[in-house]
Structure formats: C-alpha cells, structure tokens
Length: 247
Image 1 (cartoon, rainbow, N blue to C red):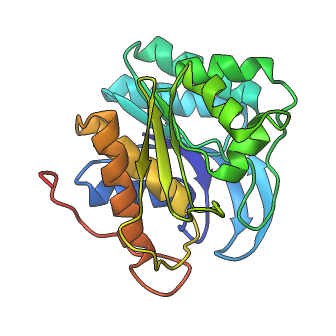
Image 2 (cartoon, rainbow, N blue to C red):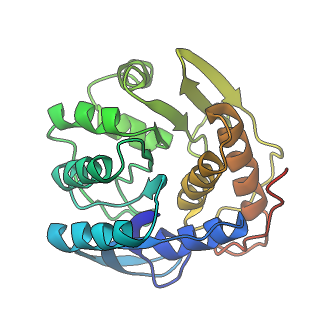
C-alpha cells in the first residue's frame, strides 16, 4: 500500500508508486494524503487531506485486504504521521513501513518543518526503513552533523540514504542496518534526472521487502531498478519496466 500525494504528472506520489508496484508484478493499494498542483518542473500548491479521511481510507482497505508492507510519502505534519503509523501497527502489528521523509518538492516547495524533534524518535521506532536523501537527512537534525544524525536514527530504524545529492560521490547510496553501513555504488555514472525518482526508489524497496528480500538485497535491487528508470529516456518523466521476480 502507498500512502502519498497525488501528482497530476504521475511522476511522483501514489500513481508513481502504483506503477512501480505493478512493474514488480504486485497489486498496489493507495491512500491519498494530499492533492498537489504540479507538473514535472513546477510545484504550485498542496491541498492536504484531513487526518480522519486518511485514516478512513486506510481502515476500509484493511477490512478487505491483508497488508504487510506500506510505503509512505508526503504527510502534512509529523503529528499526522504518528497517527498514521500507530493506526497501521494497530491494524497489523507485524507491518513493515518504508518511509520516504519528503521535506520539500524538487521545485522548492516546503512541506513542513522539524521543530518537534521529540516526535521524530517515535516515528523512527515505528518504521522498518527510511529513505532520505542528503538534503533531507540534514534537515531532520539541522544542529547535528550528517554522521551524528545517521548514528542517532540508526539506533531505531534502518536507513537507505540516497546519494543523488552527494557532492563527493554522486549516486553512491549508503545502507545503515544491523549496526553496519554498506555502500551501494551506482551501476553507471551517467544518468538522467527524473521527477519522482525518490518515490520510485522507496516504492521499489517496499516491493522487494514484500517479496521477502532481506534489507541489503532489497536496497541493492531497488537502487538498480531506480537507475534503469532514470536511464529509460532523456525526459524528466521516466518509464517503468516489468521485472522478473526471480532476478
């Protein structure tokens, strides 16, 4: 299940997530957390969905389906995110949640601040893995170094740190889990930027977790899938491709 915003261009958000799930031969359910006014290059507005409506969408899906993995994208506030996470764990105590902690749109639209630092630890403990990029990891704890932030968060959850914004090793991701870090180098140094690539990676990661890959293999395969998506064409809107679940 994807809990995310609706992007009219379908490059990001729930429609992008559903395309990623389908590419992995999985059926995706979706819960809308926001309706955005955007295309692949401009972000103009965001209309947040009420907390009660988000929870109602989640609950009616659980009435019909067994949901083991959830990917979460934009949410209007940390407090709303806590409500969603707690309800998901009530509905399935064994649920695995992949959180893409989106702080702003690629066009620069800020979604929310990190003023309430205390609630963040609760969020990390309720997530199976989070997928921030370098800008987002700095925004989460602006008074700490990246290394200190990673240490702080990794005590509570796994981290797939996306490397697209790195200056030293662009495209090199790092996985933090089980008290160790693993570098995930890119398959190619030449990629074409894509609107919504972060959504694609977290949705692919959720797919591989559902397919019972361990964290390390899931992260590697999600990165490779995302790279192929980035190189699918020269535009800002990538194309998805079907995968063989045995590969």
